[in-house]
Image (cartoon, rainbow over all chains, first blue to last red; front, side, top):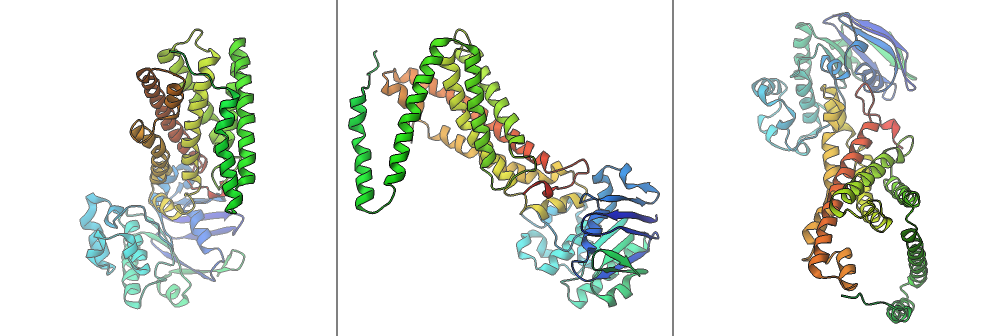
Amino acid sequence: MNLIVDALRNALAGPFTFTVAAGECLAITGASGSGKTVLLRMIADLDPHEGGVTFDGVDRASLPAPAWRRLAALVPARSGWWADTIAEHFPREREAAWRAIAAGLLIPDALFGRSIEEASTGERQRLALVRALIAEPRLLLLDEPTASLDPVSTKAVESAIAQRLAAGTTVIWVTHDAAQAERVGDTRLRMRAGGVLGA
Amino acid sequence: MTPLTLHAGDIAIAAILLVIDAALSIGLRLRFHRALAIASVRMVVQLVAVGYLLRYVFAGHSPWLTAVIVLAMSLVAVREVAVRPVRRLAGGNAVVALPNVLGIVLLTACFALLTAIRPHPWYDARYAIPLVGILLGSILNAASIALAGVLDNVRQQRDAIEAQLMLGATFRTAAAPLLRRAIRTAMVPVINQMAAAGVITLPGTMTGQLLAGADPVDAVKYQILLLILLTGASCLAAVGTAYGAVARLSDGRERLRLDRLS
């Protein structure tokens, strides 16, 4: 289930060409505004761009966009919410599963009955991660998933992702924290100003 | 029952009210007398011109002339709908407004002329033009509110829409809350108009007919027919415009294309 990213580019950043082996984590570091988010959005096919992506031998262009995004889940740095209560953002038929994942990420159970405005930034970030994990994507695109978290929650997120990696999920993890990149990445790349990736 | 005829002198007496308004504006330094004077003159000149134009059109029985006037009225309405939102779609808001306004006014006007009103011939300008005019007023309202509801709110809904896209929703599903809110808002004025009719206000058409000497029950029948037509047209306009605007904000890969909005 290799991920092959081939010459992805748009007006803001790129071209990006790299490969991530199945079940491995590529950690990408770099200054804010250098194009890390742009890269993840292009892989998830959320912005117009040139270039191609192949995952597990399947050409992204051969799949309808929603099917691709169920396979390759992007967890953005700033999460969006559309319903009145937090629980309504999760599939009702799999409630036991998402409550278990949420508990693993130290999210208080009582939070689900409240509205999203009552959740802290760090809680929202972990809730968005739960929402993506529950769909069991085979490729996870994480944009600063622990940026607003305390060390204990950060550790919980890192071990939840490690479990997914062990189960064969491929991960691209964007972080500004070099020590975290060292901890979580099997391979590491650095985004330079102007949107160029290097070792 | 003979309608009472108004003479220019009778209207001049009523205009004393406007003079009092202007005097108040000058005396209390409200500074609206200039705008009031210009608006009053415009109102009189525009309406007199329309009166003579319609007298000419009604006498002529030319379906082509009627068609040209209906088209011109519709294009003015399209422009009003297109300029109302703060945001502009690439290619212009008229791309969405034109087919909706024109299509719906023709559809509802022909429907009413061929089924309920049935003049001879069915395109008789005396019926077609006033009907198109009142329909356009409602369509303009509904379409412009729906269009602004989508275009002016989509940017702040970006995170919510893209969050659903990232989870594998289609653009149609992700944009549904925005779409529904825009359509519901656009339906408020016309639903209020029906709910208030006769209790809080006497609708304009009915008031005009009563003042011109018509029987109240006859006037009411026309008013009911009109309110049904206006509501039907408004709903179609709100739905068509909101869906049209949302469709312009996506592409074949189910993305939210805010770059098409300025």
